[in-house]
Length: 282
Length: 156
Image (tube, each protein chain N blue to C red):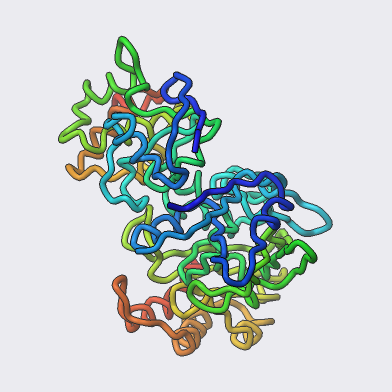
């Protein structure tokens, strides 16, 4: 049997997390929608689970000085209903609209999605494209690091054993920047993406690219961005020919695997064409 | 551990392992077998319950998480007479084998608590987490539309 603790303050969480070297580390959970599915197959249950759902202060969304701050225990449903997210961070709004299903959105959280670190995590592509930063807190210190430096591979993060993710910090993009989230899956709801693309594009008055960021999910061990390809687009006009050419470059650089959902070849083929979707909106 | 909560409107004081799945607590310990389990991994919606009025999956919740919460299962959804959602499901033939029905009904209750006049697309999105193995979605959507203030239903 696992003990289950639901602390109400960060201090309590940190106190519960402290244990001697020979003790089994407690396992943290947010919404439980990933962990409890995986736990079903474990022969040995963890001796101690710590749920973060009641920790005060982790469920707020605020906007200040050009940054949106999202508490790690904000649910996908709360993101979906937030005017701040809908008005300022449309790309994330689009992603949570098609994340999981209604009950999964009621339970799952943005912090859980990040710490699960699945290459298919639906919030991750937008967060990479937006250049999100993560606030990590231990009992003694708080540090802030970019999400791309935090996620190291499938299920692997830079979270230290005494740290928890407390907030996601997003620089508000230029109001004229357009966000696009595209997900290819077997059905619309409850699909683990086969490929996803989050794109954030800002054009100047001459329709020339000021910046164009593309983040691809499910085609590598982490979400992938290619800053050199993105930089090559600056100052150019997004013609169909250019977008097709850039799609080819992305397809060459991704490192997909073949798995139960799709073959690596299929993923390359679709990645090459996916950027064309942004032209549908122009 | 001892857990106090409200189940179907009645105060409950339960002595249960903190890591017991809520679906097992409901079905096996309390005999509330209206809550179904199919996939056990959050993908089918058969185990949907309402927690403080919001739909959640009881196969992915631990007993400790319902402390202080109001739980509603299909058994508590109506008392002497059927709830209008249930009446509509019957009237529109929205039930085939019935296995998904408790979850569907509660998913619809969640939808109608947020939006009293959903359109067809909104209804489809609202039940997108609930799998009907008989694929009887069309009649379920019709049943829900009949409950709304939407004029379009009669013509479809």
